Image 1 (cartoon, rainbow, N blue to C red):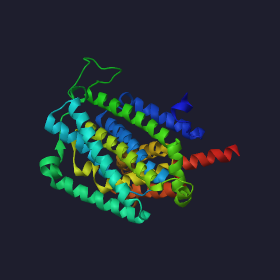
Image 2: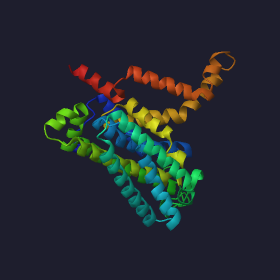
Image 3: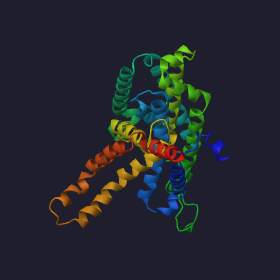
Image 4: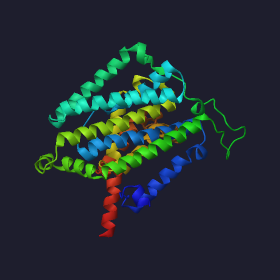
Length: 357
Protein backbone atom coordinates (compact mmCIF):
# COMPACT_ATOMS: atom_id res chain seq x y z
CA UNK A 1 0.00 0.00 0.00
CA UNK A 2 2.77 2.43 0.96
CA UNK A 3 4.75 1.44 -2.14
CA UNK A 4 1.77 2.23 -4.39
CA UNK A 5 1.18 5.53 -2.57
CA UNK A 6 4.81 6.50 -3.25
CA UNK A 7 4.56 5.30 -6.88
CA UNK A 8 6.98 2.44 -6.07
CA UNK A 9 9.72 5.03 -5.47
CA UNK A 10 10.77 3.99 -1.95
CA UNK A 11 13.60 5.77 -0.06
CA UNK A 12 15.92 2.75 -0.65
CA UNK A 13 17.79 3.62 2.54
CA UNK A 14 16.69 2.72 6.05
CA UNK A 15 18.27 5.88 7.49
CA UNK A 16 16.58 8.04 4.85
CA UNK A 17 13.27 6.28 5.47
CA UNK A 18 13.39 6.99 9.19
CA UNK A 19 14.42 10.59 8.54
CA UNK A 20 11.44 11.07 6.21
CA UNK A 21 9.08 9.50 8.76
CA UNK A 22 10.35 11.84 11.48
CA UNK A 23 10.02 14.86 9.18
CA UNK A 24 6.45 13.94 8.22
CA UNK A 25 5.42 13.34 11.84
CA UNK A 26 7.05 16.60 12.96
CA UNK A 27 5.28 18.58 10.23
CA UNK A 28 1.91 16.95 10.97
CA UNK A 29 2.18 17.65 14.71
CA UNK A 30 4.08 20.96 14.41
CA UNK A 31 1.31 23.21 15.83
CA UNK A 32 1.11 20.99 18.94
CA UNK A 33 4.80 20.11 19.34
CA UNK A 34 6.28 23.54 18.65
CA UNK A 35 3.98 26.25 19.99
CA UNK A 36 4.65 29.82 19.00
CA UNK A 37 4.16 31.97 15.93
CA UNK A 38 7.76 31.65 14.70
CA UNK A 39 7.85 27.84 14.87
CA UNK A 40 4.56 27.53 12.99
CA UNK A 41 5.74 30.04 10.37
CA UNK A 42 8.96 28.05 9.88
CA UNK A 43 6.97 24.82 9.45
CA UNK A 44 4.62 26.48 6.91
CA UNK A 45 7.57 27.93 4.96
CA UNK A 46 9.19 24.49 4.94
CA UNK A 47 6.06 22.97 3.41
CA UNK A 48 5.87 25.65 0.71
CA UNK A 49 9.55 25.19 -0.14
CA UNK A 50 9.15 21.41 -0.33
CA UNK A 51 6.59 21.86 -3.11
CA UNK A 52 8.51 24.69 -4.78
CA UNK A 53 11.85 22.84 -4.78
CA UNK A 54 10.25 19.55 -5.89
CA UNK A 55 8.67 21.35 -8.85
CA UNK A 56 12.05 22.85 -9.77
CA UNK A 57 13.73 19.44 -9.44
CA UNK A 58 11.33 18.17 -12.10
CA UNK A 59 13.10 20.60 -14.43
CA UNK A 60 16.70 20.44 -13.23
CA UNK A 61 17.07 17.01 -11.71
CA UNK A 62 14.84 14.94 -13.98
CA UNK A 63 14.99 16.82 -17.30
CA UNK A 64 18.35 18.58 -17.06
CA UNK A 65 16.92 22.07 -17.73
CA UNK A 66 18.49 25.04 -15.93
CA UNK A 67 15.85 27.76 -15.54
CA UNK A 68 15.98 31.01 -13.58
CA UNK A 69 12.31 31.84 -14.21
CA UNK A 70 10.91 29.53 -11.53
CA UNK A 71 10.30 32.33 -9.05
CA UNK A 72 8.30 34.13 -11.72
CA UNK A 73 5.69 31.36 -11.71
CA UNK A 74 5.91 31.28 -7.92
CA UNK A 75 5.14 35.00 -7.85
CA UNK A 76 2.32 34.70 -10.40
CA UNK A 77 0.51 32.25 -8.12
CA UNK A 78 0.92 34.52 -5.11
CA UNK A 79 -0.12 37.68 -6.95
CA UNK A 80 -3.10 35.94 -8.53
CA UNK A 81 -4.60 35.11 -5.13
CA UNK A 82 -3.68 38.52 -3.68
CA UNK A 83 -5.10 40.59 -6.56
CA UNK A 84 -8.35 38.63 -6.66
CA UNK A 85 -8.81 38.80 -2.88
CA UNK A 86 -8.08 42.53 -2.87
CA UNK A 87 -10.44 43.37 -5.74
CA UNK A 88 -13.26 40.90 -5.05
CA UNK A 89 -13.05 40.68 -1.27
CA UNK A 90 -12.19 37.76 1.01
CA UNK A 91 -13.77 34.44 0.14
CA UNK A 92 -13.05 31.07 -1.44
CA UNK A 93 -14.51 32.25 -4.73
CA UNK A 94 -11.87 34.99 -4.91
CA UNK A 95 -9.07 32.57 -3.99
CA UNK A 96 -10.11 29.99 -6.57
CA UNK A 97 -10.67 32.59 -9.28
CA UNK A 98 -7.32 34.22 -8.58
CA UNK A 99 -5.52 30.89 -8.60
CA UNK A 100 -7.24 29.82 -11.82
CA UNK A 101 -6.24 33.06 -13.53
CA UNK A 102 -2.66 32.76 -12.25
CA UNK A 103 -2.47 29.15 -13.38
CA UNK A 104 -3.67 30.09 -16.86
CA UNK A 105 -1.04 32.85 -17.14
CA UNK A 106 1.72 30.52 -15.87
CA UNK A 107 0.78 27.74 -18.29
CA UNK A 108 0.71 30.12 -21.25
CA UNK A 109 4.04 31.76 -20.35
CA UNK A 110 5.78 28.47 -19.62
CA UNK A 111 4.61 27.00 -22.93
CA UNK A 112 5.78 30.07 -24.86
CA UNK A 113 9.15 30.02 -23.10
CA UNK A 114 9.47 26.30 -23.75
CA UNK A 115 8.53 26.41 -27.42
CA UNK A 116 10.68 29.42 -28.30
CA UNK A 117 13.68 28.85 -26.04
CA UNK A 118 14.23 25.14 -25.44
CA UNK A 119 15.75 24.64 -28.89
CA UNK A 120 18.79 26.71 -27.90
CA UNK A 121 21.76 25.55 -25.83
CA UNK A 122 21.38 25.15 -22.09
CA UNK A 123 23.33 28.27 -21.10
CA UNK A 124 21.40 30.45 -23.56
CA UNK A 125 18.10 29.07 -22.28
CA UNK A 126 19.16 29.88 -18.70
CA UNK A 127 20.00 33.46 -19.74
CA UNK A 128 16.64 33.84 -21.53
CA UNK A 129 14.73 32.69 -18.45
CA UNK A 130 16.77 35.04 -16.26
CA UNK A 131 15.92 37.97 -18.54
CA UNK A 132 12.20 37.07 -18.56
CA UNK A 133 12.12 36.71 -14.75
CA UNK A 134 13.90 40.08 -14.28
CA UNK A 135 11.48 41.77 -16.66
CA UNK A 136 8.50 40.31 -14.82
CA UNK A 137 9.86 41.47 -11.44
CA UNK A 138 10.32 44.98 -12.83
CA UNK A 139 6.79 44.89 -14.24
CA UNK A 140 5.35 43.79 -10.88
CA UNK A 141 7.18 46.65 -9.14
CA UNK A 142 5.94 49.29 -11.59
CA UNK A 143 2.29 48.27 -12.01
CA UNK A 144 1.38 49.72 -8.64
CA UNK A 145 -2.33 50.02 -9.46
CA UNK A 146 -2.58 46.24 -9.81
CA UNK A 147 0.28 44.76 -7.78
CA UNK A 148 0.82 47.45 -5.17
CA UNK A 149 4.30 48.19 -6.51
CA UNK A 150 7.19 47.89 -4.07
CA UNK A 151 4.78 47.99 -1.11
CA UNK A 152 2.96 44.87 -2.29
CA UNK A 153 -0.60 43.85 -1.45
CA UNK A 154 -2.12 43.01 1.91
CA UNK A 155 -5.42 41.14 1.83
CA UNK A 156 -7.83 39.15 4.00
CA UNK A 157 -8.25 35.40 3.86
CA UNK A 158 -11.54 33.47 3.86
CA UNK A 159 -13.05 33.32 7.33
CA UNK A 160 -11.97 29.92 8.59
CA UNK A 161 -8.29 30.38 7.69
CA UNK A 162 -8.06 33.93 9.03
CA UNK A 163 -6.31 34.50 12.39
CA UNK A 164 -9.50 35.96 13.90
CA UNK A 165 -11.40 32.69 13.44
CA UNK A 166 -11.54 30.83 16.79
CA UNK A 167 -13.99 27.90 16.65
CA UNK A 168 -13.17 26.51 20.12
CA UNK A 169 -13.47 28.33 23.41
CA UNK A 170 -10.91 26.12 25.17
CA UNK A 171 -7.47 24.96 23.97
CA UNK A 172 -7.24 21.59 22.21
CA UNK A 173 -4.35 19.51 23.60
CA UNK A 174 -2.86 22.70 24.98
CA UNK A 175 -3.14 24.57 21.68
CA UNK A 176 -5.40 27.55 21.08
CA UNK A 177 -6.84 26.52 17.70
CA UNK A 178 -7.54 29.43 15.36
CA UNK A 179 -7.68 30.12 11.65
CA UNK A 180 -3.89 30.13 11.42
CA UNK A 181 -3.82 26.47 12.46
CA UNK A 182 -6.48 25.64 9.86
CA UNK A 183 -4.42 27.50 7.23
CA UNK A 184 -1.37 25.45 8.19
CA UNK A 185 -3.19 22.14 7.79
CA UNK A 186 -4.66 23.32 4.47
CA UNK A 187 -1.11 23.94 3.23
CA UNK A 188 0.03 20.59 4.64
CA UNK A 189 -2.76 18.69 2.86
CA UNK A 190 -2.28 20.42 -0.50
CA UNK A 191 1.52 20.01 -0.40
CA UNK A 192 1.20 16.31 0.49
CA UNK A 193 -1.21 15.65 -2.41
CA UNK A 194 0.83 17.58 -4.95
CA UNK A 195 4.09 15.99 -3.79
CA UNK A 196 2.59 12.51 -4.27
CA UNK A 197 1.41 13.63 -7.71
CA UNK A 198 4.94 14.75 -8.57
CA UNK A 199 6.24 11.37 -7.44
CA UNK A 200 3.73 9.74 -9.76
CA UNK A 201 4.80 11.93 -12.69
CA UNK A 202 8.54 11.27 -12.36
CA UNK A 203 7.96 7.51 -12.00
CA UNK A 204 5.60 7.27 -14.98
CA UNK A 205 6.67 6.49 -18.58
CA UNK A 206 6.66 10.27 -19.14
CA UNK A 207 9.13 10.70 -16.29
CA UNK A 208 11.37 7.94 -17.68
CA UNK A 209 11.53 9.79 -21.00
CA UNK A 210 12.51 12.99 -19.18
CA UNK A 211 15.36 11.14 -17.48
CA UNK A 212 16.45 9.70 -20.83
CA UNK A 213 16.54 13.23 -22.26
CA UNK A 214 18.59 14.37 -19.27
CA UNK A 215 21.15 11.61 -19.83
CA UNK A 216 21.42 11.92 -23.63
CA UNK A 217 18.99 14.07 -25.54
CA UNK A 218 20.45 13.11 -28.94
CA UNK A 219 19.87 9.42 -28.27
CA UNK A 220 16.33 10.09 -27.02
CA UNK A 221 15.62 12.04 -30.21
CA UNK A 222 17.13 9.27 -32.32
CA UNK A 223 14.82 6.58 -30.91
CA UNK A 224 11.72 8.61 -31.70
CA UNK A 225 11.00 10.99 -28.78
CA UNK A 226 10.35 14.65 -29.59
CA UNK A 227 12.65 16.16 -26.99
CA UNK A 228 11.34 19.71 -27.44
CA UNK A 229 7.78 18.51 -26.76
CA UNK A 230 8.78 16.61 -23.62
CA UNK A 231 10.91 19.47 -22.35
CA UNK A 232 8.07 21.90 -22.96
CA UNK A 233 5.63 19.71 -21.02
CA UNK A 234 8.17 19.42 -18.21
CA UNK A 235 8.43 23.21 -18.16
CA UNK A 236 4.64 23.58 -18.10
CA UNK A 237 4.14 21.05 -15.29
CA UNK A 238 6.92 22.58 -13.23
CA UNK A 239 5.37 26.04 -13.63
CA UNK A 240 1.95 24.75 -12.56
CA UNK A 241 3.27 23.30 -9.30
CA UNK A 242 5.33 26.45 -8.61
CA UNK A 243 2.17 28.53 -9.12
CA UNK A 244 0.37 26.40 -6.53
CA UNK A 245 3.24 26.92 -4.08
CA UNK A 246 3.02 30.68 -4.57
CA UNK A 247 -0.73 30.67 -3.92
CA UNK A 248 -0.19 28.71 -0.67
CA UNK A 249 2.47 31.17 0.49
CA UNK A 250 0.13 34.09 -0.21
CA UNK A 251 -2.64 32.48 1.85
CA UNK A 252 -0.23 31.96 4.73
CA UNK A 253 1.32 35.45 4.74
CA UNK A 254 -1.81 37.36 3.66
CA UNK A 255 0.69 39.61 1.92
CA UNK A 256 2.50 39.54 -1.41
CA UNK A 257 5.39 41.74 -2.51
CA UNK A 258 8.29 41.52 -4.97
CA UNK A 259 10.71 40.51 -2.21
CA UNK A 260 8.56 37.66 -0.88
CA UNK A 261 8.12 35.74 -4.15
CA UNK A 262 9.99 37.26 -7.09
CA UNK A 263 13.45 38.08 -5.74
CA UNK A 264 16.55 36.40 -7.16
CA UNK A 265 17.55 35.45 -3.60
CA UNK A 266 14.64 32.99 -3.52
CA UNK A 267 15.90 31.47 -6.79
CA UNK A 268 19.33 31.02 -5.22
CA UNK A 269 17.72 29.39 -2.17
CA UNK A 270 15.92 26.93 -4.45
CA UNK A 271 19.18 26.03 -6.19
CA UNK A 272 20.95 25.55 -2.86
CA UNK A 273 18.21 23.29 -1.53
CA UNK A 274 18.23 21.15 -4.67
CA UNK A 275 21.99 20.68 -4.39
CA UNK A 276 21.89 20.01 -0.63
CA UNK A 277 19.01 17.53 -0.84
CA UNK A 278 20.07 15.82 -4.04
CA UNK A 279 19.10 16.41 -7.67
CA UNK A 280 16.84 13.94 -9.38
CA UNK A 281 15.29 12.73 -6.12
CA UNK A 282 11.97 14.12 -4.96
CA UNK A 283 12.92 13.18 -1.40
CA UNK A 284 15.85 15.55 -1.72
CA UNK A 285 13.36 18.42 -1.82
CA UNK A 286 11.98 17.31 1.56
CA UNK A 287 15.31 16.78 3.31
CA UNK A 288 16.98 19.81 1.73
CA UNK A 289 14.08 22.17 2.49
CA UNK A 290 13.94 21.11 6.14
CA UNK A 291 17.72 21.48 6.59
CA UNK A 292 17.94 24.84 4.79
CA UNK A 293 14.88 26.51 6.32
CA UNK A 294 15.86 25.42 9.84
CA UNK A 295 19.40 26.73 9.33
CA UNK A 296 18.11 29.96 7.83
CA UNK A 297 15.79 30.65 10.77
CA UNK A 298 17.60 29.20 13.78
CA UNK A 299 21.31 29.45 12.96
CA UNK A 300 21.39 33.03 14.25
CA UNK A 301 19.86 31.92 17.55
CA UNK A 302 22.47 29.16 17.91
CA UNK A 303 25.26 31.60 17.20
CA UNK A 304 23.84 33.92 19.84
CA UNK A 305 24.11 31.12 22.39
CA UNK A 306 27.66 30.40 21.25
CA UNK A 307 28.65 34.05 21.48
CA UNK A 308 27.24 34.21 25.01
CA UNK A 309 29.16 31.10 26.04
CA UNK A 310 32.40 32.44 24.54
CA UNK A 311 31.97 35.97 25.89
CA UNK A 312 35.37 37.35 26.84
CA UNK A 313 37.34 35.16 24.43
CA UNK A 314 38.83 37.79 22.06
CA UNK A 315 38.72 36.07 18.66
CA UNK A 316 36.17 33.27 19.01
CA UNK A 317 33.42 35.53 20.37
CA UNK A 318 33.67 37.67 17.22
CA UNK A 319 33.78 34.68 14.88
CA UNK A 320 30.54 33.21 16.26
CA UNK A 321 28.77 36.56 16.40
CA UNK A 322 25.09 36.33 15.35
CA UNK A 323 25.75 39.08 12.81
CA UNK A 324 27.89 36.61 10.85
CA UNK A 325 25.18 33.98 10.44
CA UNK A 326 25.23 34.30 6.64
CA UNK A 327 28.94 33.49 6.67
CA UNK A 328 28.31 30.34 8.69
CA UNK A 329 25.39 29.41 6.45
CA UNK A 330 27.76 29.61 3.50
CA UNK A 331 30.34 27.50 5.35
CA UNK A 332 27.69 24.86 6.09
CA UNK A 333 26.69 24.82 2.43
CA UNK A 334 30.29 24.35 1.27
CA UNK A 335 30.78 21.52 3.77
CA UNK A 336 27.54 19.83 2.71
CA UNK A 337 28.53 19.97 -0.97
CA UNK A 338 32.02 18.64 -0.14
CA UNK A 339 30.82 15.75 1.98
CA UNK A 340 27.59 15.09 0.03
CA UNK A 341 28.44 15.76 -3.65
CA UNK A 342 25.30 13.90 -4.77
CA UNK A 343 23.19 15.51 -2.04
CA UNK A 344 22.08 14.07 1.28
CA UNK A 345 19.63 11.65 -0.33
CA UNK A 346 22.16 10.49 -2.91
CA UNK A 347 24.78 9.89 -0.23
CA UNK A 348 22.40 7.93 2.00
CA UNK A 349 21.28 5.76 -0.90
CA UNK A 350 24.88 5.10 -1.91
CA UNK A 351 25.71 4.06 1.66
CA UNK A 352 22.72 1.69 1.67
CA UNK A 353 23.92 0.10 -1.59
CA UNK A 354 27.42 -0.40 -0.17
CA UNK A 355 25.99 -2.04 2.93
CA UNK A 356 23.90 -4.42 0.81
CA UNK A 357 26.91 -5.26 -1.34
